[in-house]
Image 1 (cartoon, each protein chain N blue to C red):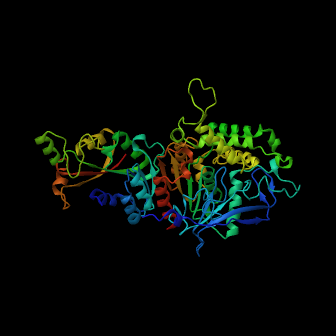
Image 2 (cartoon, rainbow over the protein chains, first blue to last red):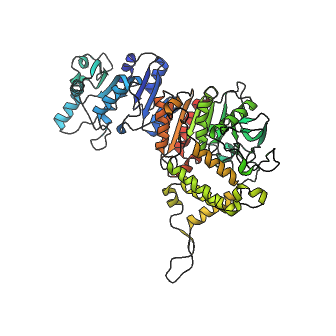
Image 3 (spheres, chains in turn red, orange):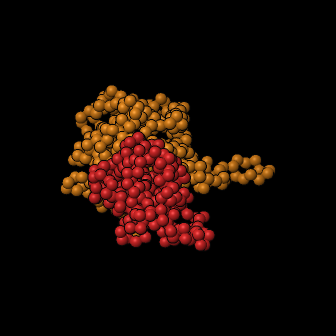
Length: 196
Length: 380
């Protein structure tokens, strides 16, 4: 299980309704169902991921996030989760608005593009970073809207989105002291608990 | 590895007949005094009686959904791709019930049956039916078979409409509702095609206003035309293009040759039409297309599908096919959206397929995977 997902769990209330945008093979939703007894729905567009998630016994709706979420009523979920998908959608700002229209709270995780390795890669080589975490080239990457911790927080402020909590994943699995102290430089993944 | 096709068949099956003496109150206000339902079953009912799956057929379907009646049958039942050992509706785990709906012409009481009051065939006087009448008669069949609650009710096209009606009429008797290539109601375009089909039958003098059995005539021409129209709507433009293109069956376009030419697609449609008209009853076709036309899931719920699905207690699987223009993916998404708004558990997959509406009968790999994955959940 990816570290950002294990971090998120504690923000999910037992027995609540959870919508997972870009739920992949449903690993995380299943964990939430097993550990937190949530009533979960996943949205996904990958064919293999959908079949895998159905095989787990999850409720999965095949839907493209870029075509909107208008079919989900206002405040119909307790929490809307979007893990590592913000940077892959066409309109991240609109998706954030939709998350907080549909859910009382939102949880977002994304790779921090201002991590020092990225900066070093770009600064010294002058080329878009390719790494173990972001293994794509600029022309074939699904990640079309990279942002940084600072960028995200600026957008939240502009949109009057309240940040309930911030968490980070650093380079190592040990207590991410550096990443907690200087997230924009040391966090590989940023995790936000937000509401309006 | 997949087992060879032969071992994945339910094998030789035998239709049975259930007799019902208690009148069935119909949506039209009339009673059907007594009736018979022909059905087949595949697999075994378990001790807890909780592994039963009901298969509802579409417009021209019948009870023979899987397996063979005789060893030399050329074709298996109409949904053999989906029903059998190791198939999506796995007969090693489920007890599958497939019936011919009342009003049909394959053994269940319908227009070709004798009206006990007149001693003549019902013909056009058979009461008009709605999807809900089929659902109520299916519930009687469930009682007869000792099935209190279906693990799943499954149907494609008009069958999917019956499955949805089940979820609303008998919420405590269905755990999963599987709706494939269906819609909550027909569009104006759907209605228009059905009207052309009925007019084709009505305009055949041999139809004799439905009294052809007494007259000893057969409206095969009208019925064949009706089927040809229907068949066009079952296939996609792409499927027709790749299957037939502009290929000629006979004749040529050479200059100086004034003989007729026949396209492959013409010959195909005529073949389909004549095959069908020899084996299907025209009054049943009229009745079935009207039931399809009149179906409107949410009519009695203030025309609000969200309110309608609020009565359901089951989980739903909805599947659509990209090139289906009879019941397009948009129609399925309307079902899904209403279920989401009604806070019902729903899973939805939109299958890329070139075959149009007919895709729901075909073993398209992703369709089989999604269907199988969901059915494993039904069985667990």
